[in-house]
Image (cartoon, rainbow, N blue to C red):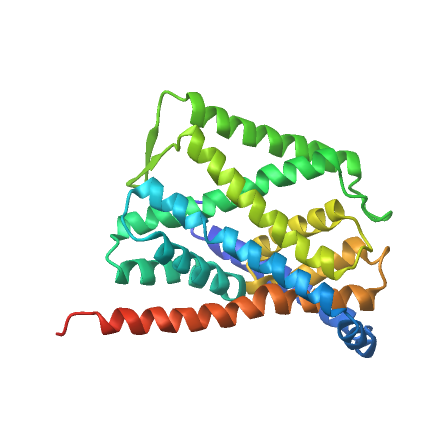
Length: 312
């Protein structure tokens, strides 16, 4: 089917209609929200709660910056660990707010390229970073959906047992990946001219450890801001669902999508104005603050590379 010239247009039209429908529902919902109560909920968040949320957000971004160290080991390039972590942090900050094409991919190609890394190596770094991030997601989602499946709203057709079965499938995928890394006699494949090497078991364990820690600390931010109104496994489950929804819809920063998923899954347990207040604080802490820091760091890196560039 993909060989038909009309297939890309069909996917584009379906995607556009879906995004438009989500936008329409969000706008209609927003008209019924008491934004005065939402504002008051944000202002009433205790300073200690906000500081704790900032600490978890900083820890999550720090852990994420370790992802490119896996790529450094995987490709064997010699950039310092500090520079690699800087590039990873900048890319992630822009990725969260502007989308993966600009942030996760574009910024890595520009910054690594300026520092002398070959494009073939950058491609492998980008691939390894994205793979590591989602491998941890799959393992963590498998664990939480299997061990502590989310109690879905009563009107949902999907129930907790079906969510548990999904978790078992995700766990099975993670186990297969680890077994391949440990025992597969074939260690490399060529896909569209690019050689893909299977990591060692030790590297695979490092991938999962870093990525899972990133997702765990990320989920701790909205959990803290909700001030104990839901338990941590519930906050983690909802965040994982919101993350995959944002990826499917291809909306930068998941604008509206994250809020919609949290509202759909938790509004029967938490007053909506409190839920929205916590989510607005979460977006400011986890998305906007790192974006400002990432932009300043990017300008510093650009100025430094231009200063040391050879004269034409």
